[in-house]
Image (tube, rainbow, N blue to C red):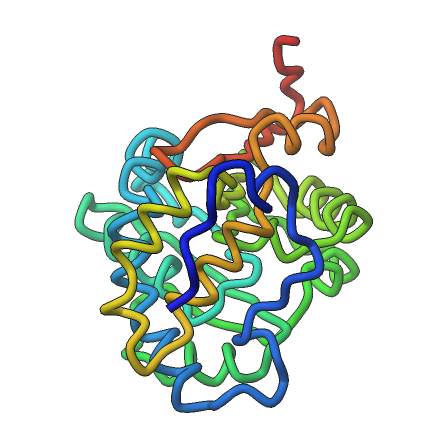
Length: 242
């Protein structure tokens, strides 16, 4: 088990050199797939998508026609499936496209039990921009901390071009509290998977709210999303207060 950092340690700055084991091309496939399978538990507990759906996505829905959603870097696809299920339970239909450039993630997502309206592609967001695609809602979960400064700028530019109504990028925030709580609470899910160690690495790589505000265009706002997440929000044509 990774050691709990001492006060004043490396959490003072992003650990951009750290690499998550899941991102290594030679990681164990069985452990990787168990990680994807358990992400539905992790995201249900800590990622805040139920509240985000209720407060930000549901008000945009209509029974007249399906609402289109793009999930960039969808991993095992659990967020896409759960959003579609919630909308269906409320009497609405989402058409969710989950994309991920990692073939292992695509294969896992595609092997999951199908949910009506949800499909997956092995693709980058830039490919969909080149195709001229548009979606009502663009989302991501735990993607931002993987990106370099240049990649983040391109990612947000792609999101703006792909989004009709709102973009919502949910990611961990770097803090001692987040690290300590995840360190203490996630180890059972880490048995036989990469969740515990990679989750701690993710927090070390993640942005604080202030860092996100400093590193993103003025059209994007940074909003708290629970104890240990930031939500990066973009609404086309809307100029946020400064």
